[in-house]
Amino acid sequence: MSKFKNAFTTLPIHHKTMLLIGFLMLISFAFYVSVMQYVLNIYDRQIYEKSSQVLNMSSVGIENKLRELSNLSFKVMSDEPLQQYLLQLEKAETGYERNSLRKKITNRLVAYAGSEKYVYSMIFIDNDNNVMAAGNREGISETKQQELISLGEQYAGSNVWLASGDQQARLLSVRQVKSFTGGSFTLEKLGTLIIRVRLDRIVQDQMQEPAEDSQLLIVDGTEVIYPTESTVSKSEIAEEMKRTQPYGIATLEQGKYFVARAHSSYTSWNYLYTTPFDQMFKQIQFVKQLVMVIFIMIFLVALVIGAKFSRSITHPIAQLIKKMRNIEKGDLDKLEEAALGNIPVSPQNEVGLLHRTFKMMLQRIRELIDENYAKQLVIRETELKALQAQINPHFLYNTLESINWLAKVQKQHQISEMVEALGFLLRSSVNMSEKWITLERELDIVRSYVTIQRTRFEERLDFDMHIAPEVGTARIPKLTLQPLVENAIHYALEPSIEPCQIRIRARAEGEYIRIEVEDNGPGMTSEFMERLQEGQIQTRGQGIGLTNIQERLRLTFGDEGTMSINSKPGSGTVVSISIPWIREDDDDVQSDARR
Image (cartoon, rainbow, N blue to C red; front, side, top):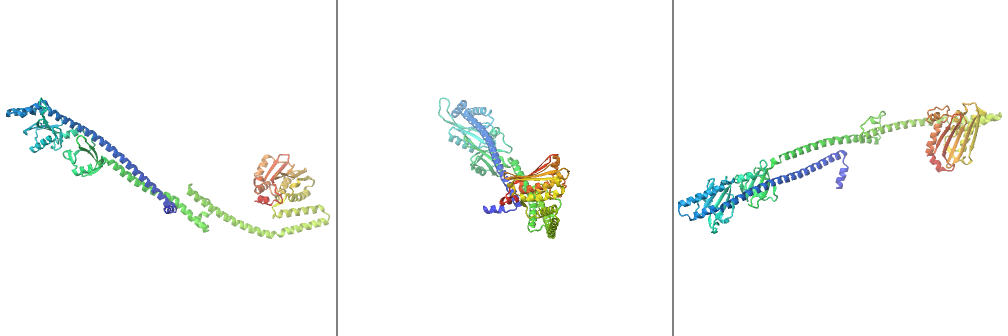
């Protein structure tokens, strides 16, 4: 079982789809066969019930008529005038007297036979074998007469049915007549009464709604009583009698027939009701064949559609796998999908989305390759320029040292102070190996910058700092405060001729440090601040803007690093920064902040 399961698991999707369709169609066909067989069984049962109903009603009607004829035979036998005539006939001495009595007996028989529909003739045979008949005058051979007389003696006055008549009167009722009237109840044999019965009329009258081409057979053992000329042979009847079920399909010489059987307890006869099977099941056979043809057509159509449907899924996947294998080998240049340009629109199904995603992935890979190549070129160019520019800072620093020495020699302390501040500021700005510095060092950079700006603005620049001692060693990203002071000078001091106050305050708030840069400049409107934060305002300076500082804080500290601006026209501006407190010896926290 596991072998088949593994074999099925490793099959391609196309073969699995075809197997699944075939399996489902076979299940549907098996279900159809089961339902059809169930329906046919029900139909057979209904046919049998209908045939059984016809048989029972017909047999009951026939047997009732036979009982009536048996009663008629007893009534004739016990007729008192007939008994007297028969007794007198036994004692008559002259031929004239016997002829006269036979005529009276005949008239009496005519009286009974004339009103009976099913009596073909009524015959009385006296002890001298003289025949008196009423009805049809067709006689009975002497041999047959002796056979009937012996049969009557055998049953000693009881009625007995004999199916050995001719075509007109197949059935005979035979009864021995005995004397039991008058004062002499001697049971003396007076003769034999024979009634020739029109069995065909009885059957025709009692048959209940026979189906077209159906036939009723009355058999005694294997002898057919009705009809007189039967198309069913004795051997076929014998085979049918062996059937245990009361109905079934029999193959006769004339073809297949549906046969229902019923047994009579009165006469011990068997009634067989035959219906042509082909005619009865003609429509059912047609429906079965039609459904079979339709099923085969549906099966073939399902296979064709299933094959196309499966191909529509597996073929694009196969192409996709082929392209992926080319990528696995590193062969990107020969794939058209890898070319730059618009992504082609593909069907919005799963396979189409796979292809479209694959094409986008290839395009992105190509873009990344090109981008990486361009970056490598830029890096090499930058490295070259860095090597070329290594001489420039040393030359600049040496020049500034020379100017500082000349200023000191010339007793120009202000120039010396500016040169020293400029040198420190340049060294701090150019040296980007340290991305993190303490707050004290950041404030030294700010002091150097303010020293240079005071030479320019003199008493108009009022700068002050209030720093809590405990936060001096806290680590912050380099060049965080200097751009804020530079912006304050650009936007608060330069546009005005009045003195401008710039304050820096730093304090601890739990595990955070809050730094504020405040000025008393003209301030900003809310609309201007919105546009400034959205990057819609082009800064006038050449340094680092507020948006850049805010983005650096977000990349460094995530949601824990925030910057807010509070400004109103005529009330100045306050820029507040809140960052986690990273101590100088807290290397783990510093590493996390760097990440």
